[in-house]
Image (cartoon, rainbow, N blue to C red; front, side, top):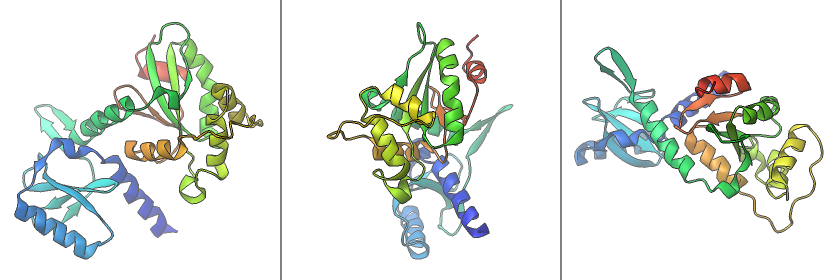
Length: 253
């Protein structure tokens, strides 16, 4: 049990580092070759996408499918964690910045027709994108705060993240329930009913819901649990938050 917990912890760290390659330039070909060879020997199941020199001298960023690790020039040593830079009296998290920039690009690529939107009352002052699971207790608790968030000028945009999808697939378990919601004539109403534990009307039979695609997007964004809330700057605000807390974090009076 302990080993499994440790494995998932490492996966979460790797997921949080995806996209940091924007900070780096390509590594020397001999360095790249050494790092690739060592990783291929030690972890043949890992596919190396690219090797780049990081902003830290002598340290290289190795982008794998699903994440990034750092390596020494000879590939003998690997590190996982955030890359920080001291600038005068300030410590800058370069990994966070790269992740935020990447998340912004991913959020901009979402088709609004694929989201379930609870619009702000009046003019929207802020937008929050929420990866949700209708069977998640804190997701249901968060949904109870949505009317108050809307009243404060916060628009909520839901994306599907059924946590059991890797095991059950999109056509069973929570994935199937979320497919019914996304295929419903009134998706917002269906979402509310589902989060209240009530039956949801059957959706269109010929509908193709983007459940798997949105789950994959969540993984790219670094989502490891639900709810996962992101602002327009690509920053993750955490899990469950109240309407008052959301307004405070967004600078809304």
